Length: 177
Image (cartoon, rainbow, N blue to C red; front, side, top):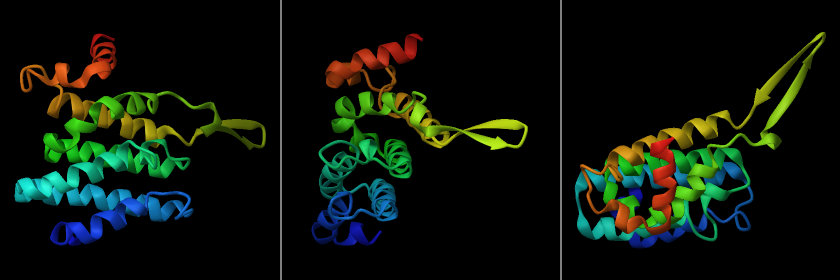
């Protein structure tokens, strides 16, 4: 909420906190992504067009770009990014629409089971499989569901498919099964 009051001063600071080279601690990056989520909700509540124009690039750099949280090395940061995109789309679809062509392929990639996040725990005579990527996949599927409802529903937004470009193929594959 503080960033909504002084966006020109605080938005660059939030964006810089996403850089793993500057901030190697994953909890710092998770906090920055979560702050962007709450900022998007505050902007949607105010319905301020000027503030929306400032927040949309910050949200886009949070989701896609060189320091994209969706492609961070830490699973918690990627989960927070998916939740942020979902919350922003739910609050105000116009904030996320410009970044959808780049975000959709990355988000769909997060729905796959990653073998490096699955481990087997030995419990004496039993072995238990633990999937550390389950929360990330749940967040990605929830985000895709929210995006379909808020931004990509054909009856709500007739021109959505033409604006998506290459990502429209991902949407077709998702909706057709």
